[in-house]
Amino acid sequence: MRSDAPDAVPGGEDALARRIRFAVEADRLKAVLRRTRLVDGSRHENSAEHSWHLALLAVLLEDAAPAGVDLPRVLRMLLVHDLVEVDAGDTFCYDADANLGREEREQAAAARLFGILPEAQARELTALWGEFEAAETPDARFAAALDRFQPLLQNFYGGGGSWREHAITRAQVLRRMDPIREGAPALWPVVLDVVDRSCRAGWIAPDPPAAP
Amino acid sequence: MRSDAPDAVPGGEDALARRIRFAVEADRLKAVLRRTRLVDGSRHENSAEHSWHLALLAVLLEDAAPAGVDLPRVLRMLLVHDLVEVDAGDTFCYDADANLGREEREQAAAARLFGILPEAQARELTALWGEFEAAETPDARFAAALDRFQPLLQNFYGGGGSWREHAITRAQVLRRMDPIREGAPALWPVVLDVVDRSCRAGWIAPDPPAAP
Image (tube, rainbow over all chains, first blue to last red; front, side):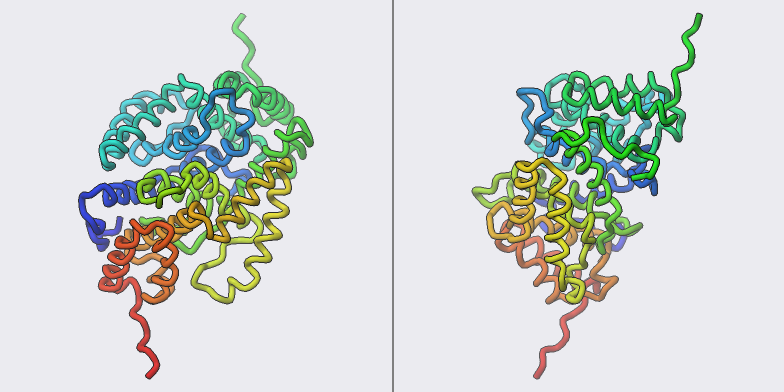
């Protein structure tokens, strides 16, 4: 927020004012850059537009959701799943070092950020985010599957994208994509085909030979 | 899409392949810039991250929706409401000339874009988009209200934003915000307060004196 902006929204500390303050904080997600590039390669994607793309994918691929998945809940989950990055930043999935301490950073971010909201809503959104992170329910598994599938599409249609840029190997990609196998089994054959084509195109690096 | 990308997704012309092709086309919405700036003023907002912000606002401001609004439908509507801009571009709401021919451009875009999808889904999403544009149902009116309210917040917390940049007057802003009065009446007092504060701050231009 600019320093010349009024420091409180009309209404002060009531529920509506807190929700508005939260929405204004959320704007900062548009400045959190991921490693994935847009399909046209022109720039890195940010976490806000990524969240939109995932929610749109959930609508488009509703038929690929396993029985019992509650799509409206999945949409809410996807809309908030990356919000903690406003404080904690995005962590590149293939960078093991950067992932140390990620959980603590994100817990602190969730407490501060969701804490801006009225209590019941803070509880609901914190729980949805926690459920996504734990990836144990069918809703969270479907959401997580989409969160893996979308960068796969971006990389494939972008001619290799972040795989190529960071020399990611076939085994690394398949390990990263594994949650799709259970979270959205209907998409798994597409994943295998995309990975095979990308290996043949040289966009995904071959696995190093196994130790003797 | 890069020229070296395989031209068909695995599966060719089946429903899943068509949905994936649509999702990849939708990526281009991230490159459509609006006149509104991020709250920190650093750059213009794009229509993909704007769509995410609106859907998030719908979740946050659910209590402000008039009785009878179906929030899950509103979320789907907001996720697709700007997609036609992939072909038709964004049209600045305060530019009357640019708005000539907008409807025809957007209709053609909708036909091409949603036409990528399997028929039933094409019909559903075209209808949702058309409903948003017509702004006659409670769902569409609530969605339209959020579509006005979000740039109001961006401009206010950004110290004037596109109002200041384009010397927009109080009467212009109030006319633009008018759909909030019916679509989300609970937000209307906030609108009036924000407009008054912004006028006092000099971020919204005074109305020209009435003709004698």
